[in-house]
Length: 152
Image 1 (cartoon, rainbow, N blue to C red):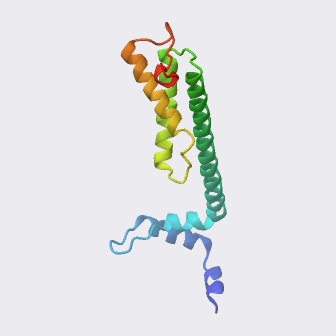
Image 2 (image 1 turned 180 degrees about the vertical axis):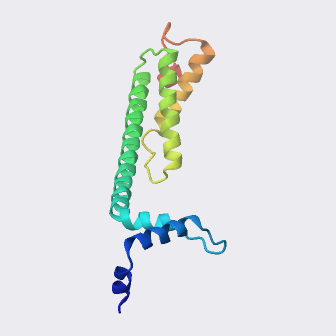
Image 3 (image 1 turned 60 degrees about the vertical axis):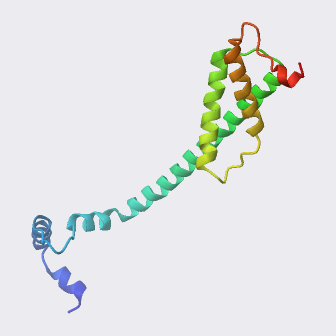
């Protein structure tokens, strides 16, 4: 008699009782969760699909995060261009860009593979002009020209 024949010869109700007892009785030195084994056997395919979907979701989240950082970098560069063209900016607009800078720099610090050589000088300019505007209390009302860059 093979193992399959032996297992098939045992009535189903005995298996139910056996699994029920094994699920309730815990032997201290044997850490086997019979319900986990049964669940994995029944749901193996579903668990594989869940793992597959989780991997796809994580990749999507990563791509979305990188897109947000790219957009922040674009706003930083555009804002810097506006400063260089002597456009006026409110304190609130500066603070929005400073939030973009924080997000961009945090992402660059936690993702060393991401290229960060495109906005370094723009960030330095924005921070210097912001500090100058704070010191002079001169934001939108009088404009915020970067006189040091104009040679004045």
